Length: 213
Length: 233
Image 1 (tube, one colour):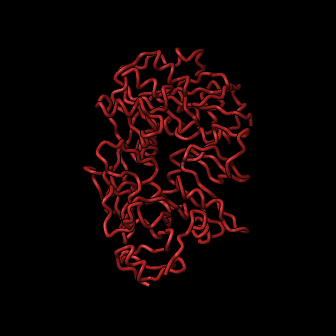
Image 2 (tube, rainbow over the protein chains, first blue to last red):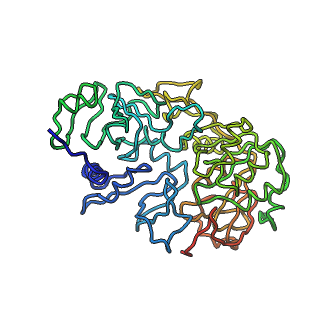
Image 3 (tube, rainbow over the protein chains, first blue to last red):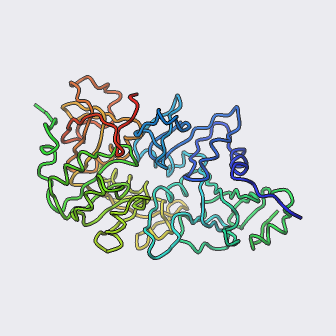
């Protein structure tokens, strides 16, 4: 039976649905930033940007851009009423200290038990750059990954053990992918939901690992 | 009388020795002390260790400093950028040493230096390549890596307002590394857009108290790619 993958926006909407009223959330660079566009109406969510912002608002119009007000991806943003600025040590204390409720990140690979690889492809001549990836991975109360399940070559990015250099160990609680939502536990993967037309058996075949119902 | 106001950037940067560790504030376009970096290039100190979140963009600012060949080592979290070609070339040809640190550990190691902490255990990076060879410890069932402070000889930062005692306020996300670098270095030079009389800064709103600041120097309020803003707020 044919199944339809979630589009980037559908995936962002799926992630957004699980964010609770009053949550302090950090959305990683790239696809996770889309989640901000799909937060359910009627709830208040405070976005954190690790360069020193709580209460981050959407991008301004081009003529209102302010080079002193940018997000972690270095794009111009705005500050909502009630928002605050703070220095880097405080900002990362919000993560490391467990004050942030949810962090949504992209990934190269996630292991069944929640190890994350998202900072380095391990190529010898690549210039390494880590930024806040390792702090974010282990800092929030819940770290969620948002990614396509398969690589362009069709290999599962959910793996028994990450082959890419690790960002954090056992830190990912959930994987939101284009075909299914999975929980990572010390015992392995658990199924949360999957797209219409895809059976649990088919999903297990795509991933190549046991997935508890 | 205490007067930390320097008449010029040259005066503020006088005496930076060869071999110094220089912390430079800024993240992205926000809070980069471009005028002070240009001043450091002019000042001429060599064999420097630079602490910054990044490793320079295009051919201006930090990239221009790297290009002079006077930087032996850079300590940062994210050197790779679309336009970090100056650093990329130096790194690939083995002419610059890189110490790569997760961003939060970088900020905390600088803060620790300023706070007199001998070393601290952090969960960030545990079990990764960036913790290789470092002491680890399990505390309360959680694993930590021992990290040491980064002490600066000089910090160059960009602030918004200051007074002759060196008290500082910042502007929006340009604050980033400024306050912790001011603490973590023996000497801190801050640019400000406005110098105000003592008492004019709301004591409840001073972000960096003057005890952490050695010199302030006034710069023009211009919007550039390396900082400032388009719209006055």
